[in-house]
Image (cartoon, rainbow, N blue to C red; front, side, top):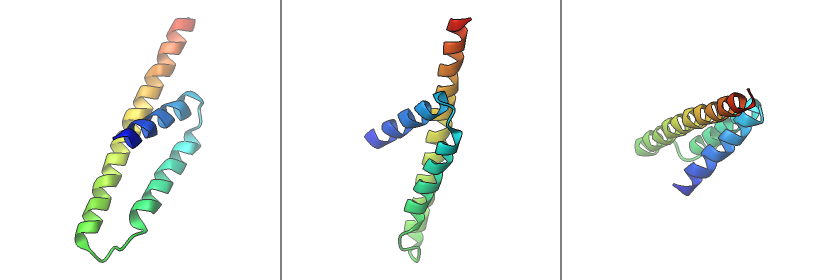
Length: 78
């Protein structure tokens, strides 16, 4: 759970700093990690897909939070 929070914090920081390429790096790295193991077991494949879906949801939430933070900063500055 802590890793998920840290991941979303990093995503928010990347969005605020306008580093969307780094977000692609996060997705690529996590997909390589998830699919580099033994794929002969159907259960392993299903768990890998579950984790990737969770990563995508986490990414969407992080981007949304980062964009809301940017919107808030822009609203304060006028």
